[in-house]
Image (cartoon, rainbow, N blue to C red; front, top):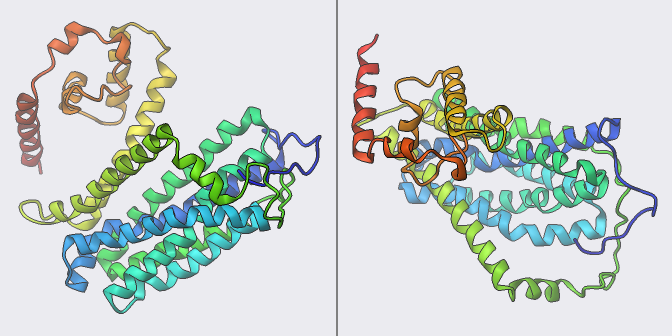
Length: 367
């Protein structure tokens, strides 16, 4: 954070339970929904975009890449602007312009204009992730900052999920353009909610003085970060992990809508629920199993949770095998408390595939 100045030495931030605290969390939640819903709404309808514009899967996937590249480029300029005009004002401008562009982009007459519009949309969206956490930490009591940040992250997650789940069924009925436009309309309401709910900032006073930061100018501070090998490693990890995650979902839709599956786009979009389901199950597990609990208790609790969610046909150990014994999900047991004998009883990957095929076949025989 640059040009940080306290508005008052006595200001300690909004405390949990206060009206302003609740308004701030609701505002940031709406900002997260407004940005990430429109950022990822085309992802669920990429096969329809490809067919309509007569382009390949790679070209269609660039509509997602263009917006994420725009977001990445826009983060630093938006951060600088927020130091000059204030956090709330900068976020309000960001979500308003992004939503306005999002309402126009679906009706781009050509593929090239669609890419340009998506890039501009991402550029405008960049203001929210660039500023939100700084705004939050300056306005919330440090004792409650982590919980408040979690609310913002929840908004981005639900926003991304909503954008995919809304655009796809609407696209099945009225086409992908109307589907993406519908999400942009919902984002407009979320952006308006942020503007109306966000309390006036009290923990930061914007400054127009370019030399007000004691650490030096923007270029000097950027170079200092780029000289750190550890930070470069962190940057690369984020780039590769997020890139792989987005690319997987970009092309999975093409695979499942084609032979031999021929699934409708709406059914394919339900795969995005898997991410939210995993987060929900993990949270339930951590709430019900104390740290260091015996492996038997951990497995029994995990089985009860899976049954509550209607997961049947596969045991917990078989679900572990699906993970390839690499990611031992917290649903089953923490790494340091796993029962080695139970791991030895897990079927091999080949056996697990055979089990899954038989299970799918049995489900297919029921009307």
